[in-house]
Amino acid sequence: WDAGKYSGMVEDYGCDYETVNRLNEEVLHPILQELVKTSFFRYFKVKLWCDCPFWPDDGMCHLRDCSVCECPDNEFPELFKEPSKARLADNMACQEGKPQAAVNRTLDNPWTHDDETDNVGMTYVNLQLNPERYTGYSGPSARRIWDAIYKENCAKYPSKESCSEQKVLYKLISGLHSSISVHIASDYLIDEVLQLWDENLDLLHDRVMRHPERIRNLYFTFFFVLRAVTKAADYLEQFEYNTGNSQEELKTTQSLVRELVFNPKIRAACPLPIDEAQLWKGEEGPELMHQIQKQFRNISAMMDCVGCEKCRLWGKLQVLGLGTALDILFSGNVTSNLIQPLQLERNEIIALINLLNRLSESVKFVHEMGPKAEKLVKGK
Ligand code: FAD
Image 1: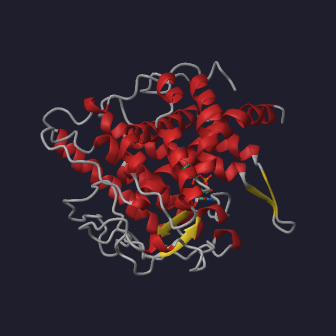
Image 2: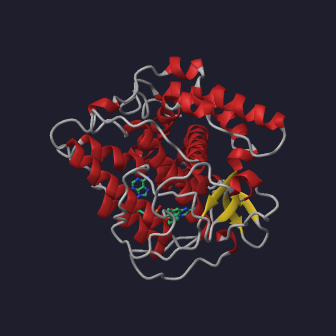
Image 3: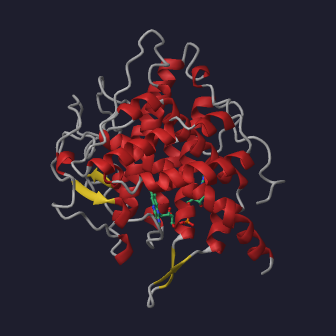
């Protein structure tokens, strides 16, 4: 770990990189790794086959590692087949014919468009059996999506004048992109014939380590989502985690959630979070909020254009997780006198925690393997 390069505070947070690394490795990572294995958190309900609302499909990735193994019907918890609560929402999962993702939403989460009440075409996926890793998906299709996300939706390198709210969205997406690249590097198909998987430190260096901004954004996104999870602590503690499995498993899940959301070490380590209240202020606040929500929903809809099933699964899950974090941190801030109580769906909570786990894995990998990757490249 190059303390010189990444010393100082994680942007917008009162926490230095070393503290974040320690906190992650000693507290967060172990809890999250256990939590995502529980039956509540390992199953994700998702519509994987939607037409891309932005451009005609240019073919799917047919490589073996692109495919998702779906759950046999009897594996998925019966209780999950019922929606956790009814929402008067549009169909989130497919956005065909809605290129602007201009869904008229009034009652539900304005940052996401998930709808558990819609079961048509839904797939149940065991996330533990479908890890985010190298799939071979690349080339013009992948490039077009990242380009569209950055070009159309976030100002790529926000200038000094661009507002803090736009910068937040850019940093979140860039941090997520870094995390995806880290997962590709940490679990890479080294030999196709022998089916040999290993780390690819050249790739880690090339896509992440040699771009300090991407590392800073990864830490920023990690902290942002962690902040959302701790802010929603009471709500998350009270949520119904019963899947119909044993009472013992239910107790384990509840106790891990408590350990995560009320952990005194997390609260003590980084006491000065981003001040959400400072964003969306001023006359243009509400308009700006709507504009950025629309951009974010466009990004969500763009996940249906990802031409690789497994990348699409994790893309959808993580963007839903980010939308949930945005909802927790920002809903109610914009129209100051209209604070709505937090309402989250089961799928949103599953996405939020799995996203946090992915980011925690990425931060750990960058911390542990980043210096090795740099040495390796220098030695060549
Ligand atoms: P890309 O990662 O495609 O990057 C494109 C351009 O974006 C870069 O040239 C650079 O200018 C910019 N950029 C890169 N990183 C950042 C950053 N952190 N912040 C800001 N700008 C950046 N492939 C897999 O093997 N497994 C997966 O699970 C997977 N999931 C994906 C999910 C989504 C939503 C998408 C769109 C793609 C996914 N891919 C996945 C493909 C993968 O992300 C790359 O696109 C692919 O490996 C080709 O990489 P590349 O080197 O061309 O650069």
